[in-house]
Amino acid sequence: MLTSKLREALICLKAGRVTLPYPFAPHDPEPGFRGKVTIDADLCFGCGGCANVCEAGVILLTDSGQHTRVLEFFWRRCTYCGRCQEVCPEGAVKLSQEFQTATNDAADLYLRLEVFMGPCQRCGRCFPPPTPLERMKRTGFRADGEGGRA
Amino acid sequence: MAMLEKACQKAFGKALWVYHANTGACNGCDIEVINVLTPYYDAERFGIKLVGSPRHADVLLVCGPVTRQVAPALQRLYDATPNPKLVFAIGSCATGGGCWFDTYSTLGGADKVIPVDFYVPGCPPRPEAILYGVAVSLGLAPKTVGAELLRQESVEELARGESIVGEVRP
Image (cartoon, rainbow over all chains, first blue to last red):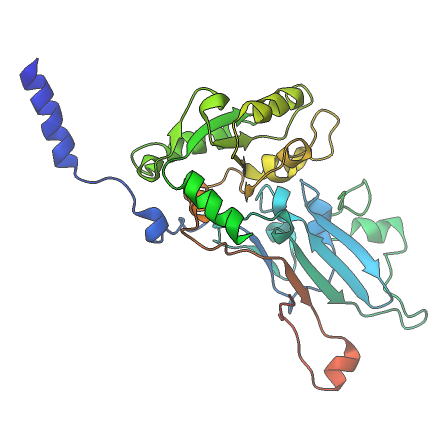
């Protein structure tokens, strides 16, 4: 009885310290980890594929004015599935390695990008594809509309 | 505000006893919360202890989009927790409803029912992310996220030679 306890204690002592010093020393995730969504404003051209495929309806796409298309990420409910990253033709949307996203304010979990759109030469506004076929050719086409249910 | 902070530090300085509430989660976040309490991550060195009753708890850990059935129970849970109390929303579902934010059977997020003090997004959040949330609440670490407002330059601004891409506006 006593010897078994002593042996147990020996095993525990031999193991040494297993606890991570985490909040005081960084502990990076493995490569391939999908963290907070980031967008490269230089590369995005506003096709809206990410909004079409987003499972949680995080991405809202609105055309404001004639030249600007606004992409809004309400990523507080992002499920980190990575579909937006897969479907982005320019590689603008990326899921970073950032995971330390705890906050006390829900408004912090928000990303907004105003994309400058090349307007129609004739009418001067950015336009949706006119025919059903062209709509289906769009990146990440989904039958139930424009995506972004927010 | 500073007084409230001081009061909070006095009240929560020693040990946080947490009560873990599953409000319709898929068990992903629950497993990560249990993971935090294992010797590997060892939240007990901060005095964090899991208790079996909300009447003993300082902190509520809410996981899951609040389903319609569980919403009144969550409200009762909140009322049963003595003041001062902190509410942590763990995971995408509790912070914003996840992919069930607009379904008929969930309310979409813990903050639709009870006031939430700290949000820990992730699906599920890494155990480190939950520990980071605890560290933020105790004032050991600053929060690293903020609303990002980006925009591209227009043709006129390009013609003027201005490039403002990637600028973060407060």
